[in-house]
Length: 382
Image 1 (tube, rainbow, N blue to C red):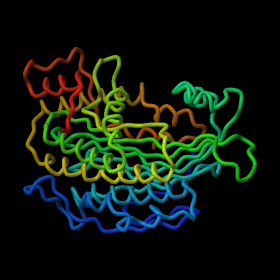
Image 2 (image 1 turned 135 degrees about the vertical axis):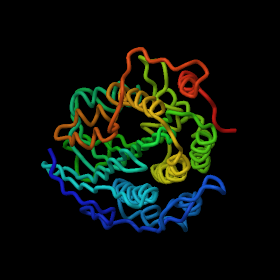
Image 3 (image 1 turned 90 degrees about the vertical axis):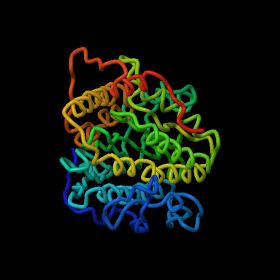
């Protein structure tokens, strides 16, 4: 269990052990010349999210702090920027900021949640910075993921871990505005009882972002994918095709033989380059999510819709729930962690969903077009 304190302000939060990262006021961004976001604070332009080091906060290049501390600073910074960007869609609605601490003293989190808004039916932007001991189930799950991990983590030893990460899920109210998910994390595993100063047995980055529309707008999906690809290409031209394919494979409801949505990028256990290079990639890819996604809500949030569109949105949300509860690694790991904060783990679930017996949309309908898109794989970038 965890102790928590709440506020309805999206203002500054202070974490223990580190000073809060630098902040910049985002500027406005549009997908095209017709799109303008409401509010005086909007979305940071892509070039201010990733590009030259001179435009980066101190933790991006600071080496006095450990990689774990720098990742902690980054996810707190990104959380504030995302909350600001999402609140700009409807300035009358504010996120509730719920700060909690583990009762065993092994970490804290900040859950920013908005419910029943005009633009956003439910949205969560969560940060967690925790440590603990890997349970037998968690260790087995890690070893089963890859032969490399199985070689480096012995089934007969005990390990401690620490992780700093951000997890985001947004369910807009309008059926024509897509749901999206994003998370980035740095995970470290230490041999239990290791000598002071001994480094981690394993350390890796994981994360990605994916889009789940109820209605398919090709321009929206292309914009989402292209923005992520641009961020990937800055670091490695193989990243986008690799991580796009990984996303399509991972976010699949196997029992329905369909993907959860129209994909994006996904990666896990990424440790094939120097940590500094991987941190900079995670920073740029995570920051690109704001430009990739928030303009899509702004474009669709005022589109007229009826009960048919609402019902279809809720049916698709039901499929979203199925994936999160049956297949998602992060959900399973969280639920297996002693003292886990269940409310934050299940924040990803929508406020409402629907299951209809044998629902099948009319052939050629907009609903059918979406269904066909998640039953096949599409390349969305040139």
